[in-house]
Length: 107
Figure (cartoon, rainbow, N blue to C red):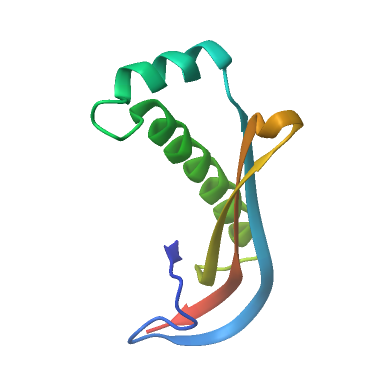
C-alpha cells in the first residue's frame, strides 16, 4: 500500500477512485505519566513521552486507513491529510485523524 499527501503518484496512473477513507485514534493521557514527562523532559525542551504517544496514535490511524483502503480493493491512498486534536474534558485525550482517497494505480 502506498500513501501520499499529493493527489497523484509519480510514474503511475490512477485507474480507479475507490472512495474516501479515514482512520482515527484517540488516546487518553495519564496524568501521572504526563507530570513526570514534563519534569523529565523540561531541560531538553521536548517531551519524549508525548512524542511516543503521538507516534503511536498516528500508526493506529494509518493502520485503520490502510484496512479501509484494502477493503475497497485499493493499492494506494492519495491526498492524505493528517490532523491532531485534543478532545475530552480539559483536553485530556489526543485524537489523530487521517483522511485520503483510496485509488487503484497502474505503472
